[in-house]
Amino acid sequence: MTDSLLTWLTANYIELLGAVLGFAYIFLSIRQHIFTWPVGLITSAIYVYVFLVSKFYADMLLQLYYVGVSIYGWYFWLKGNPDSKAELTVSRMPRRFYLPVIGITIVLFLIFLFGLKYYTDSPVPFGDSLTTAMSIVATWMLARKYLEHWLIWIFVDFFSAFLYGFKGLWPTVVLFLVYTGMAAVGYRSWKIDLNRQNA
Image 1 (cartoon, helix red, strand yellow):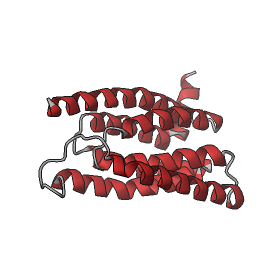
Image 2 (tube, rainbow, N blue to C red):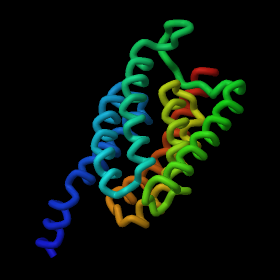
Image 3 (cartoon, one colour):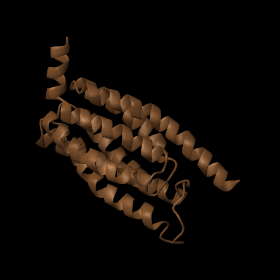
Image 4 (tube, rainbow, N blue to C red):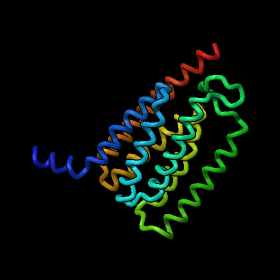
């Protein structure tokens, strides 16, 4: 039993490290801590490799995007609101962004679906494309501290857990199930913070 566990840990240590850092990332983002971004950057770099090996190509590209958006979010959270120069605080996404965000999500989904279906050997092109498109939008929303990004993550994380189970990425399945619960906690925490600001 111990030998089997050691063998498994040795074979999957990179994925496990990514999962542990992923827990730290989501915890820090709930707390609105600036270290959300450097930890997220390292986590994403690890998962570029994990998803490449597992043939989750859209998710691999998503992790590359996360590396870039981590730098953007880090800068944005440090510098504050570009309009007022005040500290960036939790807010609701402006209604004028709803249609563009939905449109961008659909376009990204269709682009990824076409690419994965016709140019890769992805076993789950529909699911991989959907979660990737939604995650791109949600991460941008996190960088702007829009409350609604947590609702997107609840769906994406839960759905992703099933996809990773299909490929036998069990530490990542556990990570994404915990992510689902933590996204719900994050939504509640940020909503309390928003209500306190507006009181």
